[in-house]
Length: 77
Image (cartoon, rainbow, N blue to C red; front, side, top):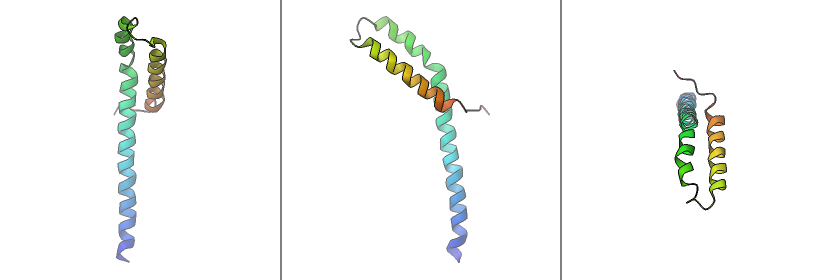
C-alpha cells in the first residue's frame, strides 16, 4: 500500500497550505481595515463630482466592515 502513505502527507500539506492562505487573507483584510478610513478622506473633496456620492460612501463603509470582520482574528506574529 504505497499510495496509502502519501495520502496523509498530502492531506497535511494541503491543510498547512490552506492555513497559510487563510493567514494571508486575514493579514491583508486587517491592514486594509486599518488603512481604509484614509480613503474616505480622499473621497470627500470629490463629493460634488461623484454623481452617486452617497452610494459610494455606503459601499466604502460596507467594504470596510467586511475587511474588519475578515481580519479581526489576525494576530501579528
